[in-house]
Image 1 (cartoon, rainbow, N blue to C red):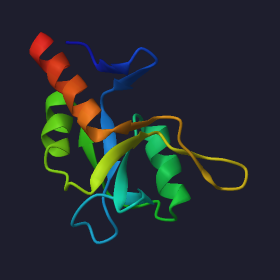
Image 2 (image 1 turned 135 degrees about the vertical axis):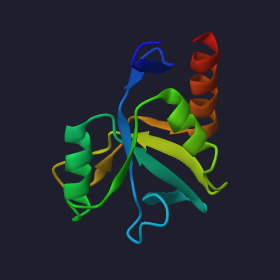
Image 3 (image 1 turned 90 degrees about the vertical axis):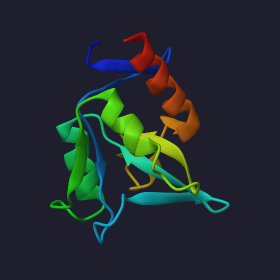
Image 4 (image 1 turned 45 degrees about the vertical axis):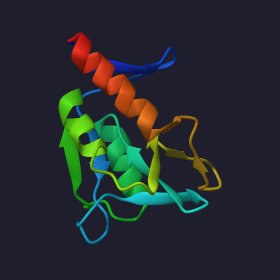
Length: 120
């Protein structure tokens, strides 16, 4: 298996990738997306990780590093049901508003990862 896996025809996730810890370190940083649902940021390289940490004002915040699809899938399976989406490589616009064209349902990403792992 190579170091990428497709989410769809337009986007590949590269490994390693990262998920930033919550402020207290007990979980992962989440962002409310409405109606009691949350998204977790997945950052696909060191630059995206550093930009995100800077954007949230915590440049030293710890992050979990995933080097394989198996590791990421295992973690995604532990997310509480309120975490319904993943946002990949969120970027801030000129007005510092989030811009996220890469928003996927967590179930879709889990299925894609599992299929890639099975295909080996």
